[in-house]
Amino acid sequence: MHFAYEPELWQGLFEMVALAAVTLTGLLSVALSINVRHIVDTPSHLARGREALIALTVLLTVAIFVLIPKQGRVALGTELIALSIIVLVIGLRLQART
Image (cartoon, rainbow, N blue to C red; front, side, top):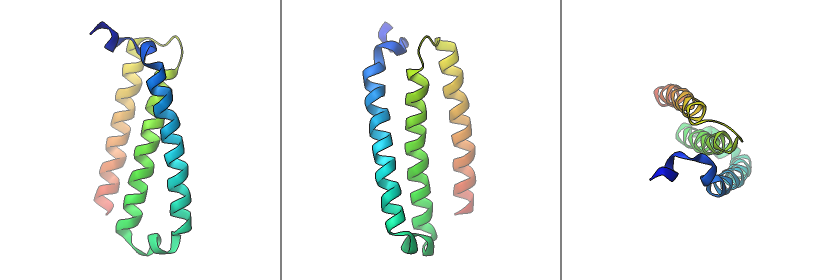
């Protein structure tokens, strides 16, 4: 299990995750812009679209953090914990609003 703690070994996987997240974010943005009248009129659809965009953005951000070259485990762990806390706070605020 030593490979689990070596982010450079996971580079191919995180490149694929970043590509998928960017692609899906673009498709979701197009879908939301095409149906903007229907989405804005329904608060639940707006909240779902916002949550999907946030989830895909978080995936992209995690992939970018892991793909930073010559980064140590401690720095990566700190970035991931900070991102998790930020996403938790934003998620709770958005859930409280809807």
